[in-house]
Length: 400
Ligand SMILES: NC(=O)c1ccc[n+]([C@@H]2O[C@H](COP(=O)([O-])OP(=O)(O)OC[C@H]3O[C@@H](n4cnc5c(N)ncnc54)[C@H](O)[C@@H]3O)[C@@H](O)[C@H]2O)c1
Ligand SMILES: O=C(O)CC[C@@H](O)C(=O)O
Image: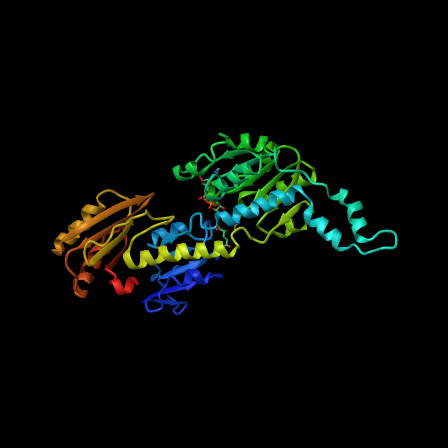
């Protein structure tokens, strides 16, 4: 049995991925895996039992990645699984930022039939106060052309907007997805200075902390509108409020609340709604539950943010897995341990990601508990090996 502990509201479509005869959900204090959304794990102690963390979403800034890597905890996310939901919300925000639909609806609700004019006449007479502007022909700057940004850029083009994209680290996969008729900016200032709207779709990390501050706001057009549906720490709040106060920035729309922002009349805060659609919650939970299950049962890694992707079908009924540091001669040292114990290798694979690496070795013969214990002790005596697991190929019945 594997034990999963969940935090936040996780869709049942995701939880259904774990068969009840093989998994307990929220049954034990020391689980094999956590399945979370925005839960902040930075102050949590990661139990020794913990093999994996699944983030049902894109952003992983709520997870202590370095600590997880060093403790042999593989962290998975659900790349792209909520991108359509965010894109649709951004389209709504662009429209609502250009047309005063929300105040107009609020005003219409106040109308009552009068002696001089009924509500129809009053609505016609008052609508001029709620004149908006169209998106077509305006310029949208998109910072980050990953799963969300590439979709936003595409849809904005379909709405007739000019689009300038900025992503110096774009992946080949996303480069293929981005519509070819957007302008590519090679600097942040290029995208900021030319856009009527700027929308940010990048991860929060040390490098992107405060990416948009006073200097960057000054580069923006007067009366531009800024959207932050990525993370709060990417945009510095105080200079944004100052720019709104002096009329340099027209509006700030964000998915991340703070009491200062909520007070300001030119700020609109949505309560972290980007990925909050039924479809996105189902997609995210299902994708990450499947990768958690794959890792727990077969040792294979897909969509991890801290360890490399490694796929290898079982070549024999027994498998050994090694999470280790990415340093020279690890394979030599691991295979030496196996040779010392007279264990024959049927197949193996090794890959690395940054400072960490992963090796899967299928072995010919089953290992007795005593032999496995000896093998594990020898492996863990090697400082650079972080975690070792022994797995048996799931039977067809178990896979069903
Ligand atoms: N509001 C929400 O509910 C919600 C939902 C989904 C994602 N998000 C946030 O949006 C972020 C992006 O999501 P995604 O699915 O598109 O991720 P993604 O990994 O597919 O794309 C991120 C892109 O940002 C680029 N990038 C990184 N740093 C950059 C920088 N300084 N300048 C320009 N580009 C940069 C990367 O190269 C990548 O292409 C997530 O990390 C998360 O924080 C929020
Ligand atoms: O789980 C959520 O609702 C938030 C998701 C979003 O912030 C993400 O990074 O994917």
